[in-house]
Amino acid sequence: MRRTPGPAAHLTATLLTIVALLAALAPFATDIYLPTFPAMASQFGASATGVQVTLTAFLIGAGAGQLLFGPWSDRVGRRLPLIAGTALCVAAGLVATLAPSLPVLVAARLLQGLSGSAGMVLGRAVIADVARGREAARAFSLTAIVLGIAPVAAPLIGAAFARSLGWRGLLGIVVGWSALTLVAVVVFVPETHPAAVRAQRRRSRAQRRGSGLGSRAYLGNMLTMVFSFGAMMAYVSASPFVYQVMIGLDEIGYGVAFGATALMITVVSFLSARLTGRVRTDVLLRVGVTILVASAAVLAGLVAAALPAWCLMIPLFSGVSAMGLIFGNATALALGAVPHAAGTASALLGAAQFLLGAAVAPLVSLAGEHSAVPLAVVFGAMSLLALAACLSARDVQLKERTPPTGSDLALETAQ
Image (cartoon, rainbow, N blue to C red):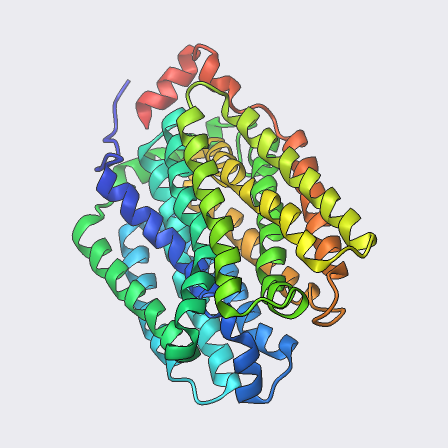
């Protein structure tokens, strides 16, 4: 059988590091200014919900942008869309930093989210291009360390500099990150999806019945990731008001509480990466989802019992920590089911993830700043949906334990 050239790259430590930083850019940009929400509301004369629109706009952009960059990269390769998206993210970030009014800020954040999504969707696609099976699962778990830290460590950084820099200065940090990642992409990231591979994969799609974007293997694991992220965003969006208004923590205390969660996500993600190869990927995923659902149940019970607000930190801490077992493994299983369309698969995953996050963000504040009932309802609903999706997925990991057939070997050789 004729061989076609493989990807012009290997999964080096440098490439994995840059992919992780690219993927974390959007979550970092989402959350770094959360501690300044009360001050922003006062400055612009807006309500808490009004200020949260800047977060919602970013998430909508991040979701929609992935639908653009993912399929585009399947057609033209990863490098050009990645450079274009990151450069546009730098420009949008500058506009957001200098925004004179809330409407301008909302528009700039929408564009920043759209362009910043390139790093997330293409980072996942790059890993899928150059790694398979357990190597991919380990890479996604290591990347999940950064992805898990970013949404919770960003407010810690924001809290530390909120008074000295204000929200404009914090968004300026995002611009600096964007510029550095742009330079790193231009200098160090090669094309991982060259023309020969793109042509071969287009020809092989018709032969891959049962393993497409509509398969349970892809959809089940993809939705597990999406709904778990919805639970995470419920926590992130509600946290400034739960911690600062309901519990009474100041900005530094809020940052410390978030930092503790970031530490646990790091530990759990690292543990997941170490266990990959000894424990099946789908088993690790199901353990994480089980912890998430149990934490949601405890949270609902505490809210229903009207116990002191500080008690809520316990189930939130454990539930968010479980993301270290969920994010990397669910992503590896989902994209592993459709290696012939990694860009589009990654785009659908990311778009659904952030569009759901955009819907979740305003829901958690429907009852005002002094009630955790919406948080408990949304967090619980997202957790149960993640469990249902996880249980519905086919065991993609069986492919790692079953000897490949001749046709499987032929397809792998062709790629």
